[in-house]
Length: 233
Image (tube, rainbow, N blue to C red):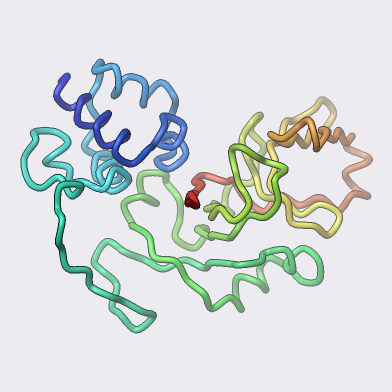
């Protein structure tokens, strides 16, 4: 079991990944990742393919040291693809919005989904493991620093627009006063809501009562279940 832990830690170090990165990219709990890294548990068969993909290696190498650790491959062929390239068996395409704000400002989310032509490819297994319906999977690009350091400007966020019920502390995409924003939401008594930024020093939280919500034009678009971040040199 410790060998599995050592290989996970090795790939995390190679890729400069932290525990929080695995939590965000895989949608698992902090405790789950801690148990992998401490050697208490090994990844389940359901999550193993996704973990291997995030760590840029193979499931066999992670569990048994078998197969190829992709980090050790110096030369390899890369098959180019474009919008005409057939999908792999475990791939689907989901709508990708470079700018989702227009759906809040002048249109509707439903109209935006119907008209968006850009797409991202992703694994069916990933959605299945999160119990996310394909029709509810949407991605968009984040902007601004209100959710820094959790979400940085330019990160890709993945939404499940089928999950709109507020769970305290979860991150949601919302339309608020005609603006598209991403915040942590908390339920208040009598139907109110707290809207909280991770960068709280620059973006103070907002508290709205049930009556205030009616005039604030607040709509929950969906739950942010994955955050994909690219570092710049």
